Length: 143
Image (tube, rainbow, N blue to C red):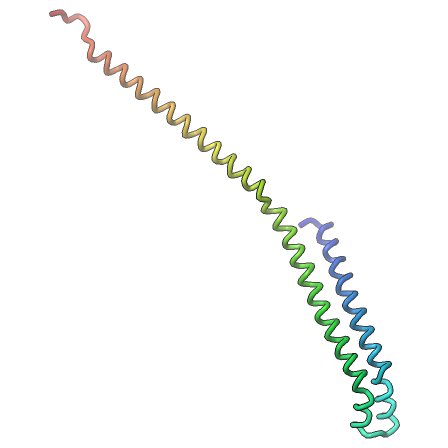
């Protein structure tokens, strides 16, 4: 794969992973705003841990969802880009028409060699037959 294609696939991966990161980060940020900040504030003011966790629970859930979206999105981006790049490379390397053309070319070459060998064998056989006929004809002997 040439450098421009590699760069194109790398940029495509960065864009997809960046989208996953932005969406996941937005969810984590929403979780902080939704409840984590309030729960932290309560904990800092001396509230019980269970009360602070109960206040922060919706925000923690949203933040956890954001982390999952980021992780799954990043892995999905990698798999998608890697698979597409490999498929493109395989299509380029193993073009069916090109392979068929190369096989036919080799077969034509071999067929030409076989035809040449057959014609050479026929020529040699006919030459041998002429020599045998000449040997059977005896010069100078009369009956």
